[in-house]
Image (cartoon, rainbow, N blue to C red):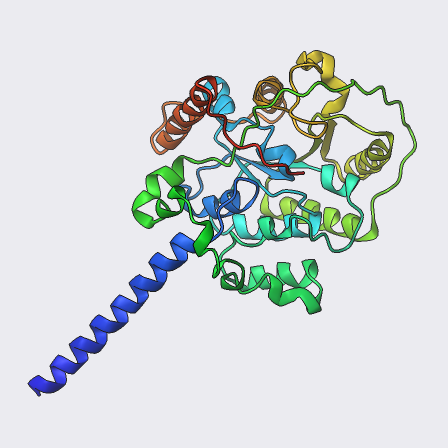
Length: 349
């Protein structure tokens, strides 16, 4: 009997060691990125049902929407839940994933991607929109509409992507464990840019409508229906960038759909002057604001959300301490830039 007990203990110990080894290896090797993967993975570390405003869409969200400013100035508990070049069919499955853990009052969805990208399968940044999501039937559903069958196993299971990262590991790869949970909770998705690249202010007066693909329109309507079912207010928007006439065609079509559905659409490219955007100082590139431009836009957006959506001010309330810590993290990034060590500069859409 003692021999059998010893064997069982050895088996249990070996199994535990195997599980711990797999967990440690996975945590170290998995791909980290501030352009979708971290935003998606970070959702799972947020206090449940604490996020009032969920910001969704492409990198125009996580590069432009300063969640620290929204909290510090307006008390808005917001999270940038977005991915580079994210198409609407992936946004739909992001919605289904977030409602497992959160019940936001407002969903703010940037619609740059359906205006700019027209392919039914968009592979350039697709990994950013897949690798951070936990395995579930919902993830498989997203994969089914986002990836052609012949390319499915290039993206799933996730281990096929990162199993050979040994030569690419950096110091931050060894700070991604469950005992770093507070640091993960403090991250709210915001990934600021620091370059100042002068742009030419566009003058667009396009009034025609068109350009929304059949697949994008299908999933836009599914998103509208799903958020109504969940009881969240949906706000469609275009964050400011160097607008083109072709993009404006699609925004006009989306605005028409929004009016018919009784929801709000705001093209913030119509408010450059009100935001006091400086096209010589406030852009990282023609598609993204830098940190300073993002502060101006986020301030304007905060006023809009407070006035039009009556979003609650959570400052000082128990359970929202991580937003205070988030403000300090962004302040540290600003200080780091001022000291000559700028943060994220990778290109994203």
